[in-house]
Length: 252
Image (cartoon, rainbow, N blue to C red):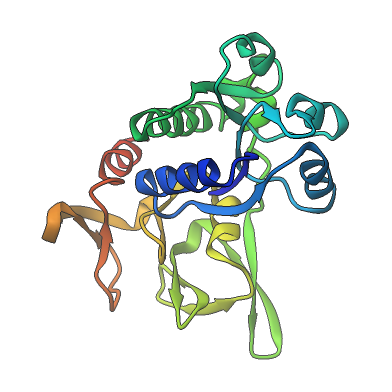
C-alpha cells in the first residue's frame, strides 16, 4: 500500500510514519509533504497513492485547498488538532478523523477501517450508489501481467500466479505450474494490479489466496504460510498483520 503524509510539523510526520509502520510494515510512505503548494505540485506530477494521511492546518493554508485545486481520488484519513472540520473532511474523501495527539491504537483503527472499506467496495454490487464508491472502485483490473522472457513479452494471467517475491532486490513471480519470471515492477505495483485475491504478507511476498494450503504457528507468535506449491523459502506473517491476514483468508 502506497501512502502520502501531508503534515507541516516534521516530528509529527515522522511519528505518524512510525505509527503506520508499526501497524503494517509493508506500507510504503512515498511522500511526506509540508504545504499546500508542495502537495499540489506533487499530485500534479505523480501517481495517486492508495491512501493519504492529512493534517488540515498547514503553513500556507488549509489542506482542503489542495483538494479544491487538484483532483485527489484517494481516500483520506485526517489527523488534526481541531475538531470543527469533521463535516468538511468527510466531504473531501475523508474516511476517518483523528484528533491530535494521536495514538498507535487510533492509527491502527483507521487503517483497519480503510482495509474494511476497500474490501467492501471492491465489487460493483457493494459499491453501487455509495458515496465512498468512487475512491474504492478497483474493479477494472487487467486479466494478465506482462513479463519479459528471453526476447519475448509474455502475458501471464493473474489467476495463474501463485505468488510474487523479492529475490536479490528484483521482483519475481511463480505460477502454479512452477514457472518463474522476473518483472520490471515493484511489489507495491504488483499489489495494486492484483487486488483482493492477493495478500501482502510481509515486505517480500504477495501471495494468492488460492495458493495457500494452510497456516501454522511459527516463532515469536508469527504465522507460517504453507503453500499448495513447493517454494524454497519459509513465508511468515508478523503478529501485527496476523488478524488482518486471517480475516482475509476466511473470505470467499
